[in-house]
Length: 69
Image 1: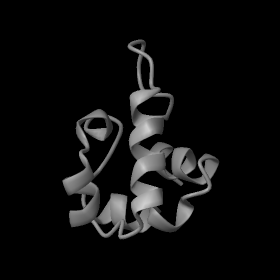
Image 2: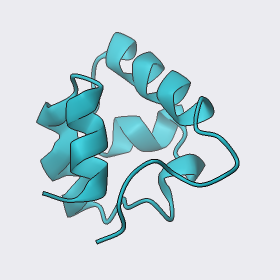
Image 3: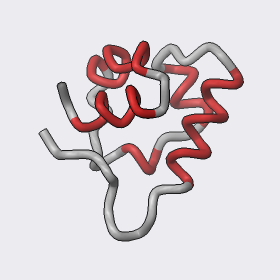
């Protein structure tokens, strides 16, 4: 399981792990995701997009808390 997949599981949003992987979303681009990008990769739920964006915003400047693959 990739670091981003583990992070998604921790948020209770593991159902999006394949979509993130299929779209090459890894720790190096995670912080660049926007609401539109999340829509593009298949996160249809507004609530899930908001949870993801809040979790991304909460990442500190010290690095993404997920392991690089």
